[in-house]
Amino acid sequence: MVAAKPVRSVLTIVAWIIIGISSIDATTWCIITNTASPARLQPHLDYACSHGADCGPLQPGGECHIPYNIYSHTAYAYNSYYIHWGKIPTACYFNGTAQITFTDPSKNIYLFSFYDTTVFILFDDLI
Image 1 (cartoon, rainbow, N blue to C red):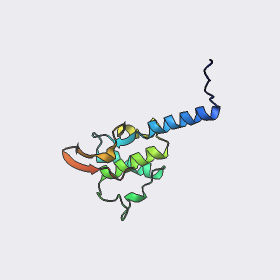
Image 2: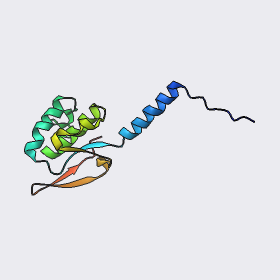
Image 3: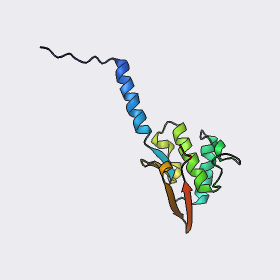
Image 4: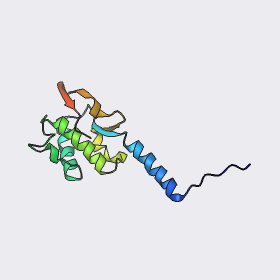
């Protein structure tokens, strides 16, 4: 008896590729590095917000305006920019102030130490 060969159309293969890419992309986030100073973050925050990041929630009265600090706002903007540009690795660089992570930051509260200043950042609203 001859075993039946599976039929694979081009559409099926393309669908598998899209599903595979989507599952990879869904597991990465763009976060700020813990070595970035406020002076280095501000120009990149401005750039991200003017080149595709959805920074409306960071505006006064927006759901992500508080906490009002450069670290939480930049973290949000970096990830929004990264998502906007299709999660390509080059969309998460910002002159070395960002990095890609495979750990979901929305599930954790991170304690960062920036230049002898301790900052708590809650990432619940990034995604």
